[in-house]
Length: 213
Image (cartoon, rainbow, N blue to C red; front, side, top):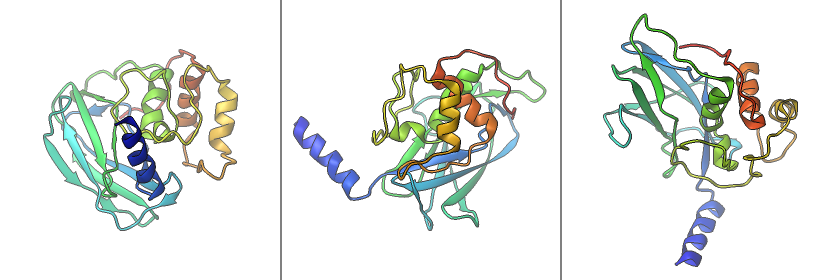
């Protein structure tokens, strides 16, 4: 049975049936009742941007409870889509991006939701980096044993394991900003996003300085 499962997975990968989702400008938290637009890209094999898809966003306020589906629309840039939704009145929101490319999807870490005028939730740079490690699609290709409560997403493991290594922060920043690889693309991360992921992979625990909602 295990051999059969391995063969099926290998066949799935060989046929080109996997893709990586990269979310752009993910807020640190949401404000209930406020409208947000999330933009994302879909890359086959982590590199080739895919056009003509029909993605959607699944929204829930508790794990495993689907409450709404919002269709995404294509942006002018290749392989780029956007979806607009209103943050629910709840403590947390669970977002899942369904790509429309075979069964590929991306479950994000649960995001905090605050009432209008409420305080910004506390978050360290390492915690922000962990969220972005999943949202940017890093965890599709790189397993990481340091991920706490990892969302149930597809893991292809075409890149090295990045957990438990406490990589040097500057080394990670250089690898992300200068992805000199035929496999890993330039994801266009901001300096703040790159720094947060580098902090997470280095094992540092410092205060977050990223963007708000």
